[in-house]
Length: 419
Image (cartoon, rainbow, N blue to C red):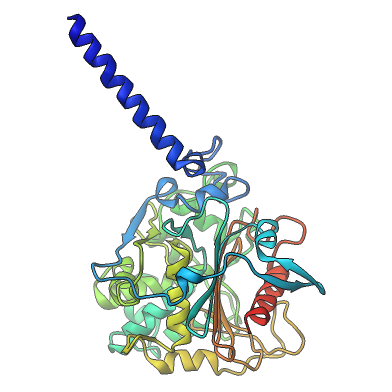
């Protein structure tokens, strides 16, 4: 009996030593993996808890895996020698990117210049292997998936939403063409006011079960398959660009109907496995099983940089043309409008095409953007891709000097520095 107790004691001591060793070797990473107190359905989207939540999405919300497949990742030349620090011009003075990343709540930043990684750095709880919520960068990946499905002749952009999804016939999107939907020129009465609890975008969050708390009182948790058909139409809106997240979810539903495949599986088969992704991605799933194409994807920084390089290469990965070059040329070469409804430099003609933001800078630059600071910047003229993942305290910034204007300034300074 005593011998057995001694053996058990030594075994327990051994386990304790191994546990201690694991803690020591994991260091700060172990502490970062601890779920912060107070994180729940009402708080996960916003600072400071979002910095942990965005890098642990499968622990926060139900998610479906987007598998990378079994082949080796496509190479990122220069990755091993990429700089961890860079000096840029900031308001007329030199500034270090590491400091600006902390000030701007940037969790990861990767720059590819002339096909080689020039800079890669992580902050917060993000690591090279860990995925991060993309928010509306997901929309651009939805557009690329639509490009693949369209190239196979499975959808016709001149047909209407109702032609593919009868359930949406009487909704705000039913009579719109798929081309209208891709450019967000549909006639739905969607309201994208993130600060208003009664806006369509926030009611969708509550209906999906992705947001809970006082702001969701009285909103039934039914999911998108019921929520989207109930969104009405606004007279006179059709033909004008108005940003609406639900429009991307409608396109995902169309793609599912046209192919008989779940949206996440389409992304997996047509984009993720073909770009040679390094890690599996994921996408959040609502209470009805609808995969949230408008803002639910989570992926690694390196893999969204690969998406950016795919776009810069006009749909090519290595020698393989996985998307039509004409689809990307159509995005890069468009002429925008001087009457753009959003803030933009006066010398530009911005536009929105195929779920991408065209800067209208005369150089073909275009971006995938998401709230809370997510970005893929694609600049054909300078042959540059900049991938950025962030955790701004709120959707539009939420802290002094943090937001879209500072992000645009930073992207411009980085592009100039690597040029």
